[in-house]
Amino acid sequence: MRIRKISMNRRDIVLGLAAGSIIPVSGCAQNDALGRSQLQLVSQNQLMSLSQQAWTDALQRERVLRDPGYNRRLQRVGANMVSSTGMTDLDWEFVVIDSDQVNAWVLPNGKVAFYRGILDIMEEDGHIATVMGHEMGHVAGRHAAERASQQRASQIGLQIAGALLQQQGVNFDQNMAAALGAGVTYGVILPYSRQHEFEADRLGVDYMVGAGYEPHQAIDFWLAMSTLHQDASFEFMSTHPSDEARVDAMRAHIASRGYS
Ligand SMILES: [Zn+2]
Image (cartoon, rainbow, N blue to C red):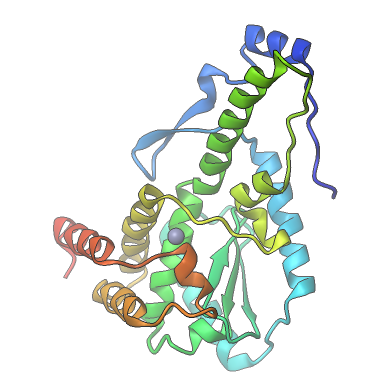
């Protein structure tokens, strides 16, 4: 599928605004996993088709590791975690990429990639569950769609200003795809906001506890990650900065839930 370009002229924008179709009031949706409402201007269909495209491209570009040891581990933790999240409607897939990179990512359609490099530093299944839970938290939190929606809203804002001077298209472009979490297609994965990171951490801990893993393994893992040097192979750290505030927030969450 080619990335769709949505072109709007000034008249469309004016009509769209009048009809409320550009930034509808209903663009804010309640997210029960987060307990807050969020801007959602991206349709589920758009999200799913871009994610599918990104997944296909990633599997073509990267070398998939077939080693049964790595795969058994990832599948085992993945299956446990999916049941715990309750997001069983997605067509989950867990793939190991044969690369030294310390990285992992998930697409909104439930396609998960862990690189050999990150699995090699995960001594316990609980460490895999930590990252898996965090990534699944981004999915449940609909963070990719929220980020893309915020970007879209600001694009439209610029667009309306620009339309007074010239007729310009709103491009459903590379940045938008990256914002949707489909940026893997272009080798660009945009970092999430701090709020999204904290939310994903909390959900991740809940999911791993629900799946029977020990929550202290999340603390152990993030502490270990924060002490590793942020060299070029640490892609994961560039999109998931680990710091004291995050670890403290996780500890507070574990205590408030009464997990031990
Ligand atoms: Zn994250």
